[in-house]
Length: 428
Image 1: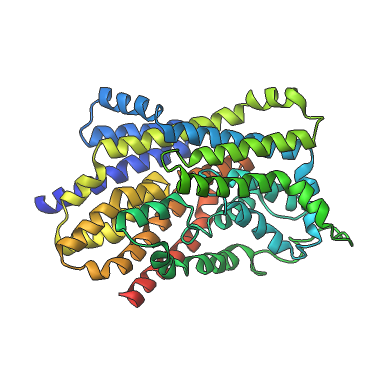
Image 2: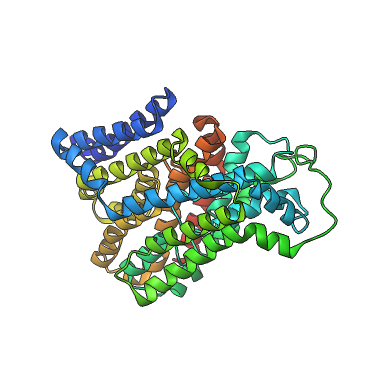
C-alpha cells in the first residue's frame, strides 16, 4: 500500500494543483491569478520554497521566449483591432464571400488559414474574422469560440514550422518526412471530428447558418487588397522564419514573426489613414490587451515552476520498465500537455525520457510508433487543457463561459486520442 502511494504521490500532487487552478477559474478570481496559484502550489508540493518559486517566476519574465511571445500577442491584438475598427475585416469577408459560398466553409477557412502561422495565441488573430463572418448567423459565442479554437489547430501535427515538430525532429534525430509520413492522419481526423461535433447539419441547421445574399461579382483584386495585411503577416512570418533558420540560425525565429506582424500593422495603418496615432494610443491602453499579457505571463511562470520543481522527473522516477514506457509514451505527454497547454512543453519534458526508455529496453526500432503515440497523447492534452493559451484568449475574446465551452471540446479530443492509439497499433 505504501509503495502504491509512493508511486501515485507525484501524480496526485499534480492533480491537486490542477484542481486548484480549475477552482480559481470557476470562482472567477481571474485566469492569470488561478494559473499563478496552481503553479505556486505545485512548486510547494514538490519541495520548492517560496523564495525559489518567486525567483523562478521573476526569471521566467526575463526570458527571450516570453518577451517575444508578449510582443507577438500584442501585435496580433493591435492588428486584429485595427482591421476590425477600420471595417477592413468586414470588407475582407465581403470580398471573399463570393469565393466561399458555403457558410460552413467560411467558419472553417479563416481559423485554418491563420493556423498556418505558427504563433502561440494565434487563435485571437482569427477570432475577429469568425465574429465578422458569423454575425448574421444564429450561433452562440461559445460555439464561435470552439470553432475558432478547434480549426485553428488542424495543421499542428504536419506543418513543419511548428516549434513542437522542430523540437521533435531535433530530439529524435530524424527527418521531417520520417515524422510527417506517420503523423499526417492527424489533420483529416481533426477536420472530420470538427465536422461531426461542431458543423454537421444535426448540430448547426440551415436556419442557424442563414446569411445575406452573396455578392454576384467575385473580385480578386478587392480580396487581395483587403487581405494584404494578413498576407504580409502569414507569408512574411513563414518566409522570415525559414530564412532565419537557413541563413542566420543564431537569431531567434520569433523575430521574424514579430517583424512580419509589425509590417502588417504598418500596412493596415497606411490603408486606413483615418485610424491615426490616436488608435495606437487607445489600443495600447486597453484593459483587454494587458489582461491577455498577464495571462501569458502567468503561463510562462507556471511552465518554469513545472520545470524547476522537477515535476516530470519525479513522476518518471517512481515508474520503471514497461510502466515507465507507458508513462513516457502516453500518460506523461498527456499530463504535461494538460497542465502546460503548449506542445513544446510535452515534447521537451517527456520525449527525452521516452527516447531514453526505448534505448534502455533495446526498442529503438519502435521509436516512430511510440513518438506518434506520444505526439497524439500530448497534443490531446494540449487541446483539452483549459489553460491552453489559444483556448483562454478565444473565450476571453468572445466573452463566453470557460467551463461550458471547454465541455464541448472534450468529445472531439477523445476521438482524436483514440485515433492516435489506433495508429500506434497499426504502426507498431
